[in-house]
Image (cartoon, rainbow, N blue to C red):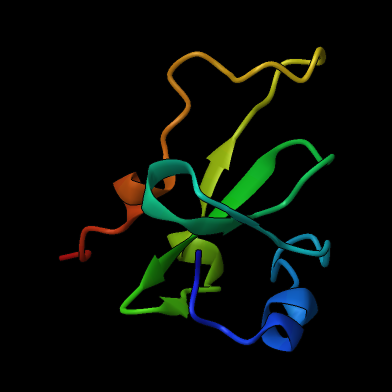
Length: 82
């Protein structure tokens, strides 16, 4: 779980879609859009959500709601960019 206060986590929105972000434990923790396609995942670095559009992991989800094959986890975005 993130160390952010609940009110901060509840106020986060996706900078691309404007949708509410939800915390996910997947891949070590990130914030993700739910119920929209494509799905946007934002990494958490040093306890701070990185809500930059160019840092997002964009994934397509199957219509049945099952996890997509080969979907990158949040940790994939945690490595610093060159």
